[in-house]
Image 1 (cartoon, rainbow, N blue to C red):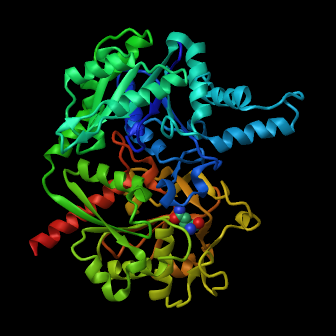
Image 2: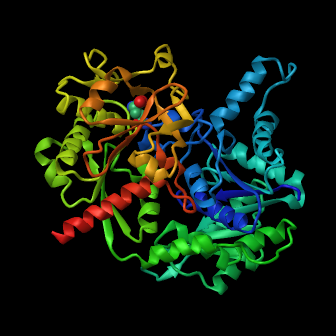
Image 3: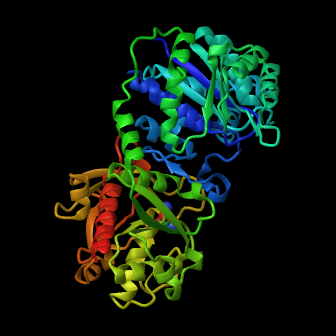
Length: 539
Ligand code: GLN
């Protein structure tokens, strides 16, 4: 079949969950056997979100091919179980960079380079780049930002042109907000009417409206909105608040969103999507009664989106284990040896978060010291793993000034150090060790048992590495290096076998955990936390 292009725009306010709606639609289409991909356009000028502070846009997600991406790509993967790549996230900065490079190269043959057609052509090329591979039946393109923003204008203009060029093979879904005015006890449609008008002024007539709401929107109100917005009444769908984002696909299916999209793009509607594995996950979620308590020690705890993929991985793991999970976010800057016991009290497992720089680092050491003393299941990820190594070198090996050269470039015991090839780099963006790398695991390690394999591949995002000069001494002191990159010999996984579950990974296993294929290492950590909890209960 010819590739169908679905554009998803948003109006009224941001944070309505365009990413979740796009991912839910993709989830349903995939469950119908279609080949689907989702792409996000971000209207900011940064080349990629890699250099953005997590306070700005939450977590930086990393694709297998090493692109530092918007966190919505994480949702796409978690909902569809389909890997994304650099082509799935494009920013205004990248579009401009590529147009300016072409201009300098003389590709425009002396023409005046303009937003229309040069920038819009580049945007359209980025959309079609996915479709033209022949690998996808549906390309869903989410336009970041809100209709009316100056920043998103070139993207919306490109959508207008593409709808014209693609005819019946293109469709526009507009996500809008229907506020509930508590004092009047009324839902209000006016913001949606205005937002659709704004879209129409830009030459885009939405085919489907998805209305974000806290209260049920009845048929009368849907018909009213349909009438005002030139949309078929059965193409007005509500997206009501639910207790888990993973319930959204079924909510969309109940209102036939997948069928509407297929019908409108000329795809015959036959049968039903196979959502059995998905609904069995949801059943587990609803059946879970007991709660497992996990601490997450990091410095961006005010903003939970900063650790989105870790939270979701913990959630997948707990749900499959039949538990609810409560994550306690613990500010590493506020942690000290004196209050670690109080701050981490009652936890069944602790995650030491990834991160950059000196701020909050001592709190991570204090947490680790306490976790080791209590023998509580502990999972160090990236910087968390590096902290495990440093703390062990200091407190067990007695190398008091052991450190990472990221924190102290003059340390005598650089147990974590810069990779040779990183030393000459001065540019900030895209210069880390990024993307998926192979790792060989020792067969008798906790990690190998968790994965059920000795050859694995996981994604990385870091500059600094375990310094192999200290491997022998650390191993003699009880910390095993059980995962090694087979090509470079770099240490990727450490464990302390004398403890219950004490594992650190230089890579980020959280990027690859999805609903249908949860991370085995998170599952193993979660089981250890649950076992530990039961043990405490029996005492
Ligand atoms: N700051 C560390 C490094 O660059 C760890 C990075 C991370 O935790 N993602 O190596």
